[in-house]
Length: 155
Image (cartoon, rainbow, N blue to C red; front, side):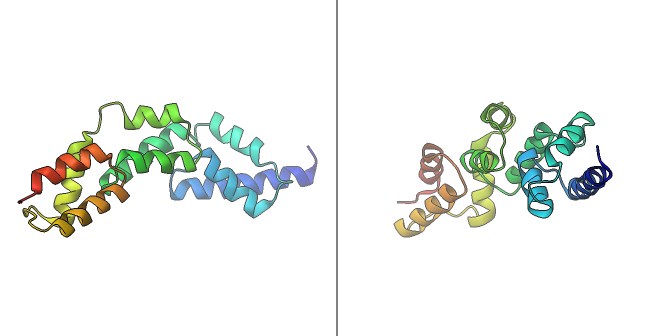
């Protein structure tokens, strides 16, 4: 490795470690950020391989932390799955964190709705439709939303 290539690797690694210190990143996200900063000629993939070997970069750790954070914010499984896919997380890894039964999505939906709307019974169809749209945008399955709406419908 030439001196210049070695210096590039050191700069790329320093930047990657700084980003990882702030929060977990998927390999895809981190690669994208580093390529934007250092360009295609930089030894980004070699640095990322090294970080993975040293357990400083882990898609599995990222997926677990990301799912937990999004659930705390009231997002549903459909939206979280799509966001993980955008961040380069494999479908089987997403499924492990979303479909393993750790989260009762009906309870997460109910808590999200209670936080946003309170526990009032809805007597207006427009208000009911508005709640349904909100929950759909949050990424909950339609059947689950219907069950919730049926439970708060007052007409």
